[in-house]
Structures are given as structure tokens and as C-alpha cells.
Image (tube, rainbow over all chains, first blue to last red; front, side, top):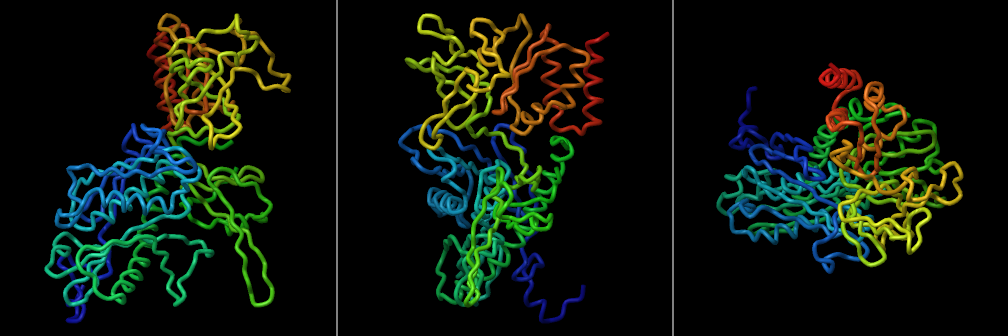
Length: 254
Length: 261
């Protein structure tokens, strides 16, 4: 494919454009003891998430009377942030908050839904891939959700270029800031719309480094919304495979 | 029963229901679906439309006028009226604590057996297996409660005293001598086994006589004349979850050949 001078400028080291995500792959229900499990890979980053729940809490006082508590545990061996200086518990809290916004926790009072995460291979965008792997595992476990929280990473480089789904090298570039955005994939027309016409259902964000202007942030939000629909389409394919197999082997027709 | 398509949580399925000619505000919604009314204000007129959305990932399926999401899971969520198999964990005063493999342990009153009085009641040891049904008034606040009594008002199920082993609910005796054991399966497989026309049980039953108790919480108890038959039945049941009907028939035939020589 011949590249003109202009498109060559927009290519990243691995040949993607600024808005292209890396190839996605996933595998569902591989763990027999977990209620739901998913291995989600985004390029070279590979995350294994397992869901246990809803289960009774080990200490009664940890449970809420009216809803489930989402607990995320990331294996301490994993490197979670792009330069290993992040607080793992802060990341666990961020993921738990993002998931709690979409899980119908009021359906499971006095219980805990535990998500256990293992980072198998890390090559940038680890936090976002972890959120997406957890979402797949939750769907595999049959936990009820209002919508799907999909995370995307944007890195804003020194010259204000926004790139989606960075690799580890791109995240570690001098002077760049990365923004992880969690958007809600509510296709329901009843979803709230932002007044200026944007359709971003943003439910959480965190940044590493200095993300300077609000315009850049809003641009990232818009890019993330668009990218999240691609991720949802992939998840739909992954689940379709599993469900079609089930409908042939497990469910009878009566 | 018609399968429509794969849905993910958050998908609006109102259009799929409308496609089949059903009015979304008149259908029954089963598990995995929830509805919301959205008010549309078009200037002067305002109408509220019913939107049905999915809350689980699965196949949108319909049976008659009821729509639900068909999906398999491994964790049992207690619902009133379910018939489950539980393992007695301990006795706490007037109640037994029974593990039904749900989020919380369930409670079974010591006198909740047919014809049981204070002087004449079963003495369940920790580790005993009971087949009982769930009765719960408020599952959101209280632990699930079980009973081994037959529902009042249903005359087709006879009321047999707990001392005879002929009643519908009660303790299931597991032992190596009589060849009985219990296995855990997924919720979907348990529901399929409860189907009267279930293929694998029919195929097995044509050659081996056996007794089976299936709890909707994914727990299955199998009893037959010899331990080797029981093991074969358990293996066949677990295999049938991942095999098509033709493969299941072949699998059962191969297994049966190993014992009927």
C-alpha cells in the first residue's frame, strides 16, 4: 500500500494511525473454579481477569445492606502503571469504581463481587485493558449490568498529538501524559447527552503526567467514545462464539 | 421457543420485540431484561414509551409471551420456590445451616419436616445432604430459608412422614456401599437435566437403573446399584454439557459398552 508523504507523518512505529486500536483477542471461561473468567489481549498487553461472586463477605461488616460491594484485587506481581510508580491500590479502587457504576449492585445486597486480575504481559494501556478484561469476565459470570464500562487510553505527546491505545514505548516518551477514560457504552437512546452535541457518557478518568488544557481532555473524551464502540463490537463477537456453541450443545429446543 | 440474537448488557431490545409483532408494554419480562419508560416531549404532545433493555449477556429468547435472556452461569442466586440440594454445615440451636452454593448459607428449621415434633425429628449431621425447597419472604435482608415440607394446597404431592423415606423432600443418604454420590454442575445444565425429555438421562436410563435428584442450584445426586454405574452416570452428565445431541448419544453408547460386557 503506497503511502503519501502526508500519511507517513501520521504513522506510529507499529504502522498504526493515531486513532487505530491494536488488534484485540480474547478467550472466555477458561478457569473452572471461577464464576466467570476472561483473557483479553490488546496487541502485546494481555490481562487475565476472574470473577467470583456474588459471595458472602469474609467479614460481615464489610458488606453493604442494600447493595453488593465490588472488590478488585490485582496480583502484586503485576506492573500496572507505565513506569511502575503507581499505587496498585489506587488502581484497584479506580477499576472498582468504574465497574460499580455499571453493575446493578442493588440486585445483590449483602454480598461481594470479587474481580481478581493478573497481568500476563504488559505493553502499554495496562489499566484500560484491565477494565475491559474485567467487563468480559463479568459478562461471562452472568452478573447483571446496566451498560458496559469500556476504558480507552489516550496519550498526549509533547506536540499536542493525541494517540489512542499507546504501547509502552509511546507511554514512556518524554513529556507525554496519558489519560485513561472509562465511557459507558449505552446504546439506549434514553442515555443522557452532553449539551454541546457530544455523546460521551463518561463515567471515570485518571491521568498520568500533566494533561494541560480542557480542550485536549475533551478531545480525548470524544476519541475514547468512538473507540469504545469498536471494543464493544469485538466483545459482542467474542460472546457470540461462546453463546452459539452453548445453544448447540447445552440448550435443548423445547 | 425462538432464538433471536446475542445481546450484551445495555442493549435496547425494544425493536427486536416489536419485530415479532409484540407490544413491548404487554410482554412478560423474564431474567436478564428490564424495562424503563422514557418520556418524549415533542413540543406539545408527550408520550411515554416503554424501552426494554438487557442486563445480562446472552441470547434473547421467547417462550410464548415471556422474553428472557438465555445464558449459563455457575453461581446460584436464591429465588423463592426453587428446589435445591444443600449440604448441612452445622446446627445452630433450632436451625441447621445449609450450604446451597449461593452467596449466603441457608437456614433449615429442625422441625421443618413432615410430621416432625420436638420428640420425633430427624437428626441431621454436618455433611448430610438434603433436598428441600426455598421459602423466603425477603431475600434482600434475610438469609434464605429452606423447608422439607410439601407446599400446602398442592394435593398431588402426598404428605409422607419424614421417617419413611418416601417423601418428596428430606435427607438423601450418600454412601459408598449403595453407590451414590453428588456432583456440582452449572446452573444451565441443572435446568436442562430437569427437562423430562433430557437426552442424556433418557439414554442412560434405557440401560442402567438409577435414581437422581437435581437441585436448581447446580447440585446433582446420583444413586445406583454399584459405584461404577454411578461414576459412569456422573461422567456422562458432565460430558453432555459440551456435546451436541448426536455426540451425546455416541458418548453414552461408548461409556455403556465399557460396563456391559
